[in-house]
Image (tube, rainbow, N blue to C red; front, side, top):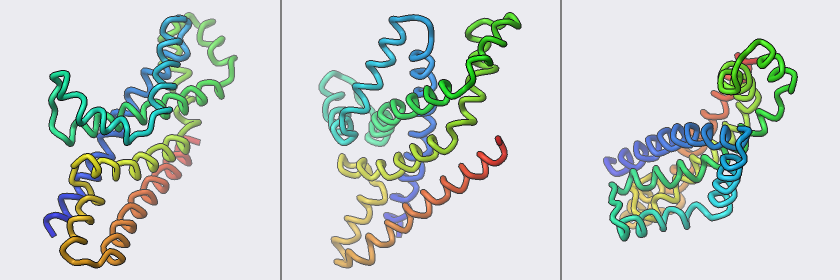
Length: 204
């Protein structure tokens, strides 16, 4: 039971922390992609293309086994968190950029007419409307991230999937064990979807 609880708590913590990190990094990358500075826009585009076109498992393996080779050592959980957050940030950035593009151009023009700087109009006018428009896409990314945390078990993090593998070695009941794990992931995904719908209705 302690192994089940440890795996569940690690999965929940990894999901919440990774999504928070992905959201923060994704906002920064999205801003880089829309600012009127060619170098920053190019850097943002390169980030998105590199991170989202390499499988997450490859990033996890690279971070877990590669970072210590260059002198960067972190606990396994935080190494997995860093890889997942940076990977999902690319998808968050693209969702936010599409949200920004969905905001009427007249909004930015009106902000500039009122004397707001680019940073002020982005913070007070553009981003709030963009976030409202991408609640469901961000929820989909959060659900995908929840499922992706199972890959952390491959590199040694004791998440629900790895805990289930260990328990199954003792019980030899794969149908029972992995059905239970699947239901846990289902409940988590359904909770994210429900929360997103409630938030979307309140922001409408």
